[in-house]
Image 1 (cartoon, rainbow, N blue to C red):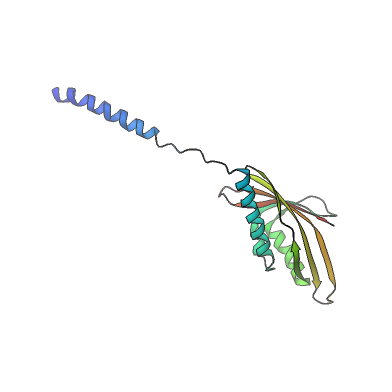
Image 2: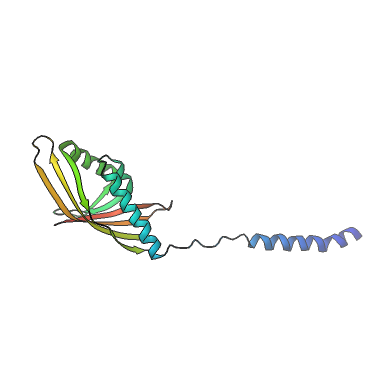
Length: 162
């Protein structure tokens, strides 16, 4: 009994030490990027998007969320998927060679886990059979959203032809 009497305070002390250490292991909340950091990050995303788009394959579609909203001139608001975007562009690439002539630097409007980017673009579609061209000049507006894996995806797009 005498041994237990002397060990009890030691056991209580160890319990308090272990309990106190357990509480010190809490993680600090993740810091949100500043507007300047978010602007730089989204600008880099837009630059990457156009870099991939200029190859005129389908890899640029990976910048889109699996489901996104689109508003195009002369059509209603649409809920689309990456698969439907691939189908749309397969038809375009089958009929036309597409050339991006130029694009403007993006303007970014940051907001925590979302950001809007917009920039001008100038591209042409050259009919593969007739060589007729369609000039497409306008402003491209995108809404980016941070994903659970911390990547950024396009969740909304629209364009305005000039």
